[in-house]
Image 1 (spheres, rainbow, N blue to C red):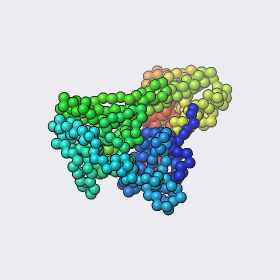
Image 2: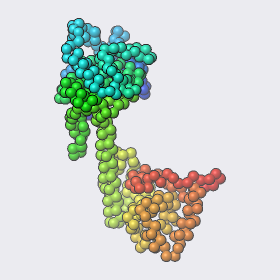
Image 3: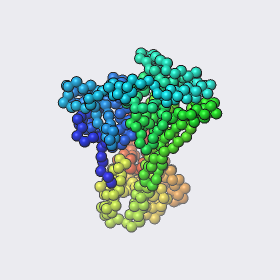
Image 4: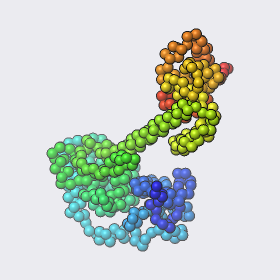
Length: 459
């Protein structure tokens, strides 16, 4: 297994940040982590929190808000002060600010022909769809709570007001985050559109949009305009990554499709619009993989327990080697096993439940199955609730009745059932093993906690 390695730069100027949510100081390497997608999402979260005037991270030395930036080489991240005025010993800003960089980049140039044509393509595509209001280009969107924006194209789709921004060159994460927050407050939706998208070497700006939009990105082109005209509805090209299980790991495959507005899911609360639900798919794959691992562990443990019962045990401390392996595996899913097999009274409980599951005697030398029932009801009353649930879940009523020739068991059931219905203390379940029993016998998990509550003055 490879050693964990953070995406943080080595020896950053700001080695720690103050997390205002928990009030704790976190190392920069830990805060940034080793997952690129999560680092990109953290960039957006930090800038959005600053735009809301509730910064998430502060420099612990000077208490100035910080945000996340990346070096061009190797995509390594570090924290930078929002304001650097000499009050802090950490120096994180270069000689040029955003305005100076913009001046050098554009040199006062007006919009490029590509940008103008992209706006025309988007406006013409929207105009193909009668469900949209007529598109407006470069008109002011005034905020109901103050402020304004000047989207490239805007229109209403039914009751949803949408802003379309063309992205041809680098845009600062600050700008992206502030626009997201503005349209979020407005109940509108911001859609970023690209002319081209390099899947193998994206610019950081593209990553800022892609990883914060459920790993979907949209492009507009002459091809999508033709598709819009043919379909009579807004069409765009979507590119996304699709996770596929390959053996024990997840492999991401790039996909591309021209999609219509009807194919898309709108999530205004998170300022997302997407064709493919990457997050939902990952959650399902993770849940399926987790369920498969747990089922394998459940089967392995059952095989171990039945084999152990078949061999007979001379000492409860036998089989410590495989048992310690199980203890580690169960620790990983939040369950604690006893120090040795069958410890703390679990031997009787598990033997009874596995006997009920398989309809045969497991762990005892009895001749008849009903003898297990008599033992639990008489000598292990705190286990009787779980045992009864198992008898019902695995349909062992006929087996019990066929062996109850004297009717003694039925009389015993009539007595203890009345007591259980009143929540009698002597039959109160032993809760120490509820988690383990629920995991090993999921068929009875829901009923474990439903033992009746004692009536006032009884029990």
